[in-house]
Image 1 (tube, rainbow, N blue to C red):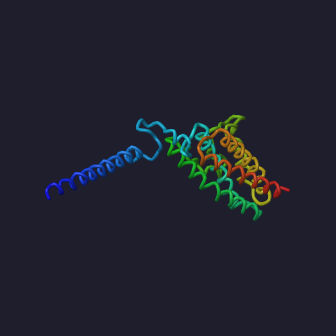
Image 2 (cartoon, rainbow, N blue to C red):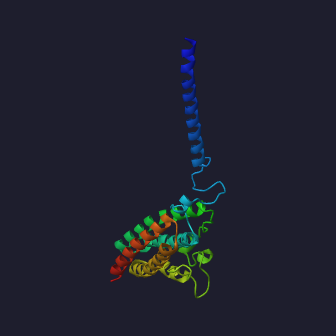
Length: 228
């Protein structure tokens, strides 16, 4: 009787030990795979892993330049759209301006979030109230200066004089100014977005660039029709 119990005990103990070993191995693999709970695709040294390199989370200098340039570019378009709300004479122009503001406000927020997540400085908010006056506070924007080449770093940006002219117009005169200047502004955005599509690495930024190209080219066509 005693011998029979011993014979049963040995395989039972071996099975228990084997199960414990499997459990321990699984826990070890799980810990290694999670890197202590890290989900950013980096190794313990902090360097991006090979998997991270192929993910949408990878970004490069072109992505940073795109976001830092497009944020103030969009801000100016929104300021122009705000002017149209009270000065435009055409219902079509007012509707177009409202659509531009509705599309670009969230994009500003999105790009600002990218820059913060990358540890980059978000371009400072400009004096939007000033953009409705004779000078609109563009001096602090990246790529803007007081010389003849102002705006070359960000194509399509309006000068202080152009913004002042539009601010002082109403009705049909405003509509014409708004449409002509916004066509130029959109063309600049399309150019910047095209550069991002070619040189950027961050998936969401490249997608946004593609969306900007599609949407703003369509709006350019609409504005040209309204101009007749």
